Image (cartoon, rainbow, N blue to C red):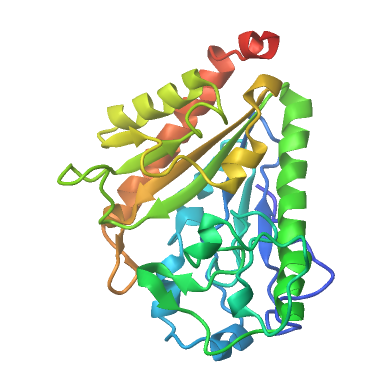
Length: 306
């Protein structure tokens, strides 16, 4: 594996307060698989200016992270697939939203007319620039400038999606199909229904709209055979990324995977537990099984003809 690419954006986050590139592309020496892996919420580099703007302490503000998910899937690069990983935190900018899902209550001036201020995610405090972290904790001490908010979108959101789009397009050209695995984690207390057993993993395909049913069924089957309690689409069917990039009729498939944090992290101190290494190994096995399935048996020719 060659050194990870760290694309520049033309400006650093928070006007120079974050010298590290906001995301990185980890590529194999040669891409041999029709898969692209994406970890948009595991970033854990917090700009100092952002921390000063926040009312939360340095542990509380991390509650929205998909903790270490990029590390859980790091092995896919040696298996022949690229991995795009955010380094900026989800609490600072959420690329799994439309580009301008913005809450006007957060800003000190009027938002541009094209901003989507009425979405359910904005109402819940979880827009492109979130107002809340998990457990409904307000992030900011006061309002931010409109320019600050838009600079995050133009300087980081748009380059992130441009690189994701390029990875998917290059994969599609090379293999005739592209399978995006959008990698996330979820709180340990998530339940599918009241009183039910907690799911270990949820596979989301937008109820069949973002990926072929056979791919979703294969993912559920492989993970179940590894001993995990796996459900599909409930309560997480996939976010903006899954919906936006999944076009199964064109050979573009997108699956979201949500992993229960209770399997591998202590949610009180956010440290890895003894379950981390086993889970990482199992997810590597799962990725290998999915790749073999697509190489050896899966065909979306029928979908393309419909």
